[in-house]
Image 1 (cartoon, rainbow, N blue to C red):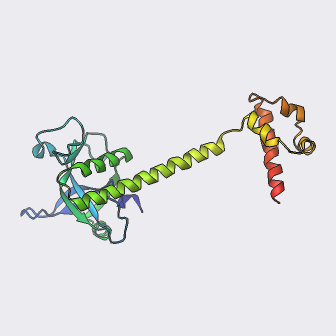
Image 2 (cartoon, rainbow, N blue to C red):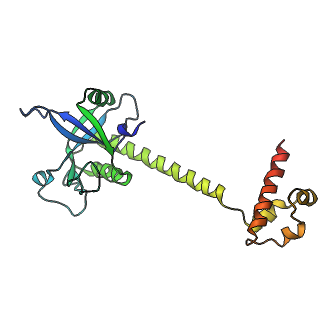
Image 3 (cartoon, helix red, strand yellow):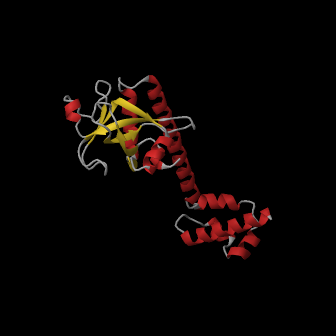
Length: 223
């Protein structure tokens, strides 16, 4: 799934509000991922005229549940140079195919992804807004759940990588050498049994040599 078709993607589209003004260029923010081929995107309009629609502002960016908006301040996102409100009270539905067709015919274009922490904030805010229908809220919640699972998996992978990269300490190496043929080990590495016995965490050079020797001996046993 490419970024432009994920929750948090900002698109500029031509949209006709059927008020006699014809199609107008508007920014929308995708509020969900299309997890199935038949899924559609729920899109919230972004406007710089939020004070006109929401004269009462909350201190926090999220106006929900009483006010169906999330406020983005200037410079927080590149595509919104002015204070911008992502509005949840007039959500439109677009399919991936419709967005692709709009882009192909130059009546729509992908602008950017919101920052990851802001995507989460926008989506969580939308689920709290009274104006958001139940089926829309459910689609957003499923997207948030998928994002959380992906984030947890990435953190676990990073933690595993860190554990693998962590240099062994003297105690661990001594334990690993228990039962090893130290004569063969000394022949391979030049490290004597006495050096292993006296090893401390400060003997970094010897630790690296021992680690290399252990890896070679373990690999040789596999063959």
